[in-house]
Length: 204
Image 1 (tube, one colour):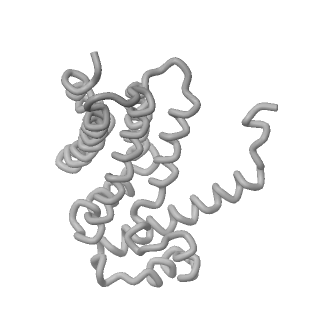
Image 2 (cartoon, one colour):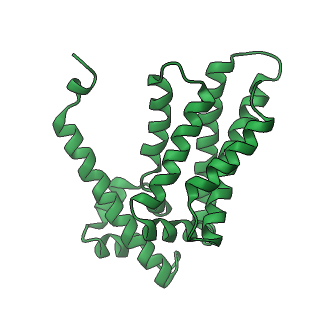
Image 3 (cartoon, helix red, strand yellow):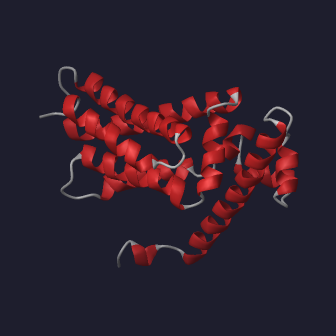
Protein backbone atom coordinates (compact mmCIF):
# COMPACT_ATOMS: atom_id res chain seq x y z
CA UNK A 1 0.00 0.00 0.00
CA UNK A 2 1.41 3.39 -0.99
CA UNK A 3 1.39 6.48 1.19
CA UNK A 4 -1.14 8.06 -1.17
CA UNK A 5 -3.56 5.14 -0.79
CA UNK A 6 -3.43 5.46 3.00
CA UNK A 7 -4.69 9.06 2.95
CA UNK A 8 -8.12 9.34 4.55
CA UNK A 9 -10.46 10.99 2.00
CA UNK A 10 -12.61 12.44 4.77
CA UNK A 11 -9.53 13.98 6.37
CA UNK A 12 -8.58 15.50 3.01
CA UNK A 13 -12.05 17.00 2.60
CA UNK A 14 -11.96 18.36 6.14
CA UNK A 15 -8.52 19.89 5.52
CA UNK A 16 -9.79 21.55 2.31
CA UNK A 17 -12.83 22.94 4.12
CA UNK A 18 -10.69 24.29 6.93
CA UNK A 19 -8.28 25.89 4.48
CA UNK A 20 -11.19 27.41 2.58
CA UNK A 21 -12.62 28.85 5.78
CA UNK A 22 -9.25 30.31 6.77
CA UNK A 23 -8.82 31.82 3.32
CA UNK A 24 -12.28 33.41 3.44
CA UNK A 25 -11.49 34.88 6.85
CA UNK A 26 -8.17 36.18 5.50
CA UNK A 27 -9.91 37.83 2.54
CA UNK A 28 -12.34 39.56 4.88
CA UNK A 29 -9.52 40.61 7.20
CA UNK A 30 -7.46 42.13 4.39
CA UNK A 31 -10.43 44.17 3.21
CA UNK A 32 -11.35 45.37 6.71
CA UNK A 33 -7.79 46.04 7.88
CA UNK A 34 -7.11 48.01 4.70
CA UNK A 35 -10.30 50.05 5.00
CA UNK A 36 -10.48 50.57 8.76
CA UNK A 37 -7.08 49.71 10.20
CA UNK A 38 -5.95 46.69 12.16
CA UNK A 39 -6.62 48.04 15.66
CA UNK A 40 -10.14 49.19 14.79
CA UNK A 41 -11.17 45.81 13.38
CA UNK A 42 -12.23 43.16 15.93
CA UNK A 43 -12.12 39.47 15.15
CA UNK A 44 -15.92 39.34 15.33
CA UNK A 45 -16.21 41.83 12.48
CA UNK A 46 -13.89 39.71 10.34
CA UNK A 47 -15.90 36.58 11.08
CA UNK A 48 -19.18 38.35 10.34
CA UNK A 49 -17.87 39.71 7.01
CA UNK A 50 -16.84 36.20 6.00
CA UNK A 51 -20.20 34.78 7.16
CA UNK A 52 -18.76 32.83 10.08
CA UNK A 53 -19.29 33.00 13.83
CA UNK A 54 -16.60 34.61 15.97
CA UNK A 55 -16.00 31.27 17.70
CA UNK A 56 -15.15 29.82 14.29
CA UNK A 57 -12.51 32.50 13.84
CA UNK A 58 -10.85 31.54 17.12
CA UNK A 59 -11.14 27.87 16.33
CA UNK A 60 -8.85 28.52 13.38
CA UNK A 61 -6.65 31.30 14.81
CA UNK A 62 -5.32 31.78 18.32
CA UNK A 63 -4.46 35.43 17.65
CA UNK A 64 -6.18 38.00 15.46
CA UNK A 65 -3.01 38.73 13.50
CA UNK A 66 -2.64 35.08 12.48
CA UNK A 67 -5.49 35.44 9.99
CA UNK A 68 -3.18 37.30 7.57
CA UNK A 69 -0.77 34.36 7.64
CA UNK A 70 -3.50 31.73 7.35
CA UNK A 71 -1.67 29.32 5.02
CA UNK A 72 1.91 29.62 6.26
CA UNK A 73 1.78 26.71 8.74
CA UNK A 74 0.90 24.35 5.86
CA UNK A 75 3.64 25.84 3.69
CA UNK A 76 6.22 25.36 6.41
CA UNK A 77 5.11 21.78 6.92
CA UNK A 78 5.42 21.22 3.16
CA UNK A 79 9.07 22.31 3.34
CA UNK A 80 9.76 19.76 6.06
CA UNK A 81 7.89 17.07 4.11
CA UNK A 82 9.82 17.85 0.92
CA UNK A 83 13.09 17.36 2.78
CA UNK A 84 11.94 14.18 4.53
CA UNK A 85 10.77 12.53 1.31
CA UNK A 86 13.37 13.76 -1.19
CA UNK A 87 15.96 11.41 -2.59
CA UNK A 88 19.28 12.38 -4.12
CA UNK A 89 18.96 16.15 -3.74
CA UNK A 90 21.04 18.35 -1.49
CA UNK A 91 19.36 20.06 1.45
CA UNK A 92 19.95 23.45 -0.15
CA UNK A 93 18.44 22.32 -3.47
CA UNK A 94 15.29 21.26 -1.63
CA UNK A 95 15.13 24.52 0.32
CA UNK A 96 15.63 26.57 -2.83
CA UNK A 97 13.11 24.63 -4.95
CA UNK A 98 10.44 24.64 -2.25
CA UNK A 99 10.80 28.32 -1.36
CA UNK A 100 10.83 29.49 -4.99
CA UNK A 101 7.67 27.41 -5.61
CA UNK A 102 6.21 28.92 -2.46
CA UNK A 103 7.00 32.40 -3.77
CA UNK A 104 5.24 31.62 -7.02
CA UNK A 105 2.10 30.59 -5.16
CA UNK A 106 1.75 34.07 -3.66
CA UNK A 107 0.96 35.35 -7.15
CA UNK A 108 -0.65 32.30 -8.74
CA UNK A 109 -3.39 31.69 -6.18
CA UNK A 110 -4.77 35.24 -5.81
CA UNK A 111 -2.39 38.04 -6.72
CA UNK A 112 -4.47 40.91 -5.35
CA UNK A 113 -5.15 39.17 -2.05
CA UNK A 114 -1.46 38.37 -1.72
CA UNK A 115 -0.44 41.97 -2.43
CA UNK A 116 -2.92 43.13 0.18
CA UNK A 117 -1.51 40.72 2.74
CA UNK A 118 2.08 41.73 2.03
CA UNK A 119 1.26 45.43 2.22
CA UNK A 120 -0.39 44.91 5.59
CA UNK A 121 2.40 42.96 7.24
CA UNK A 122 4.88 45.56 6.06
CA UNK A 123 2.85 48.46 7.46
CA UNK A 124 0.78 47.43 10.49
CA UNK A 125 3.04 47.14 13.60
CA UNK A 126 1.19 44.17 15.13
CA UNK A 127 1.33 42.29 11.85
CA UNK A 128 4.99 43.22 11.35
CA UNK A 129 5.79 41.77 14.76
CA UNK A 130 3.96 38.52 13.98
CA UNK A 131 5.66 38.36 10.58
CA UNK A 132 9.08 38.50 12.25
CA UNK A 133 8.07 35.68 14.60
CA UNK A 134 7.04 33.57 11.62
CA UNK A 135 10.29 34.39 9.83
CA UNK A 136 12.14 33.02 12.86
CA UNK A 137 10.14 29.78 12.62
CA UNK A 138 11.21 29.46 8.98
CA UNK A 139 14.84 30.22 9.83
CA UNK A 140 14.80 27.49 12.47
CA UNK A 141 13.32 24.98 10.00
CA UNK A 142 15.86 25.78 7.27
CA UNK A 143 18.73 25.61 9.77
CA UNK A 144 17.52 22.18 10.94
CA UNK A 145 17.34 20.94 7.35
CA UNK A 146 20.84 22.17 6.57
CA UNK A 147 22.20 20.70 9.82
CA UNK A 148 20.71 17.30 9.02
CA UNK A 149 22.89 17.21 5.90
CA UNK A 150 26.03 19.01 7.06
CA UNK A 151 26.15 17.30 10.46
CA UNK A 152 28.12 18.41 13.51
CA UNK A 153 31.51 20.02 13.24
CA UNK A 154 33.42 23.20 13.96
CA UNK A 155 31.25 26.14 13.00
CA UNK A 156 28.50 23.94 11.51
CA UNK A 157 25.67 25.40 13.60
CA UNK A 158 26.80 28.94 12.82
CA UNK A 159 26.97 28.19 9.10
CA UNK A 160 23.57 26.49 9.01
CA UNK A 161 21.96 29.39 10.82
CA UNK A 162 23.70 31.88 8.55
CA UNK A 163 22.40 30.08 5.46
CA UNK A 164 18.90 29.95 7.00
CA UNK A 165 18.96 33.65 7.87
CA UNK A 166 20.15 34.49 4.37
CA UNK A 167 17.42 32.34 2.77
CA UNK A 168 14.63 33.91 4.80
CA UNK A 169 16.20 37.33 4.34
CA UNK A 170 16.12 36.79 0.59
CA UNK A 171 12.40 36.02 0.80
CA UNK A 172 11.79 39.16 2.86
CA UNK A 173 13.75 41.21 0.34
CA UNK A 174 11.78 39.63 -2.52
CA UNK A 175 8.54 40.73 -0.84
CA UNK A 176 9.80 44.32 -0.61
CA UNK A 177 10.94 44.31 -4.23
CA UNK A 178 7.51 43.06 -5.28
CA UNK A 179 5.75 45.77 -3.28
CA UNK A 180 7.96 48.39 -4.88
CA UNK A 181 7.26 47.05 -8.38
CA UNK A 182 4.08 44.91 -8.39
CA UNK A 183 4.45 44.19 -12.10
CA UNK A 184 7.48 42.03 -11.29
CA UNK A 185 7.45 38.53 -9.77
CA UNK A 186 8.34 37.42 -6.26
CA UNK A 187 9.81 34.13 -7.46
CA UNK A 188 12.19 35.95 -9.84
CA UNK A 189 13.42 38.21 -7.04
CA UNK A 190 13.85 35.25 -4.72
CA UNK A 191 15.74 33.19 -7.30
CA UNK A 192 18.09 36.13 -7.85
CA UNK A 193 18.64 36.41 -4.11
CA UNK A 194 19.42 32.70 -3.87
CA UNK A 195 21.94 33.07 -6.69
CA UNK A 196 23.79 35.60 -4.56
CA UNK A 197 23.67 33.29 -1.54
CA UNK A 198 25.10 30.42 -3.53
CA UNK A 199 28.20 32.42 -4.44
CA UNK A 200 29.31 32.93 -0.85
CA UNK A 201 27.56 30.88 1.80
CA UNK A 202 27.17 27.32 0.59
CA UNK A 203 29.73 24.52 0.91
CA UNK A 204 32.00 24.09 -2.09
